Image (cartoon, rainbow, N blue to C red):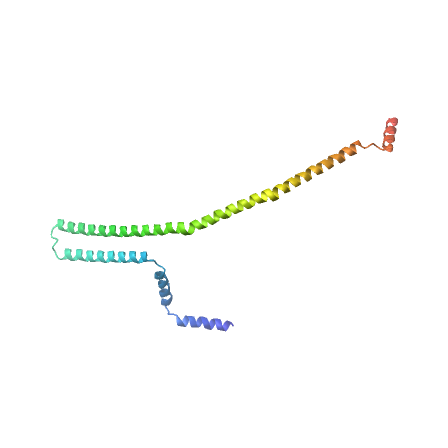
Amino acid sequence: MPENNTTAKADETNNSTPNGADSVSEESKGFFKNRGWQFYVILGIGGVIAILFIILVIAGIIGYASGKTSDTASAVAIVRDLFIILLTLEGILIGVALIVLIVQLAKLVNILQNEIQPIVDSAQEAVSTVKGTAEFMSKNVTTPAIKASSYLAGARAFIREMRAISRLTKPTSSKAVSRSESDQDSN
């Protein structure tokens, strides 16, 4: 039996690539498979912004290298225009992120109303059932048991007191009386 395990391990190591590329590709497939459409929208917008930023940087470098920016004012105007374009792209990205946030918030509200609310309702129903059961047990089991116990305790106390009274009221025997008289005579 142990020989089979070692041969299976050896077969696994021979079939896999030395750098573990198979496991990475499987992990990346799982990573992209579980993403929703919002992820791909944000990824696409981020890619477009990155490409535009690279194009703007290249255009700025080419414009500066061509020598058309002879004075400082035109160089500052180019930098200003680049920042205006970048801020506009950032505003667009923030707008898309807000739209995605609103969609996610709507999904959360939907989940709360349709999935969590029934769970809360069933929990409240279970609590009310337990409360009713506790009241029923209190009325039909606990209260009669307490009453019966108190009656028994009262009966025991009554019997104990009656025995004590009967012992105190019993006439004493003649031997006890004669002894007490003889004790008095000897004094």
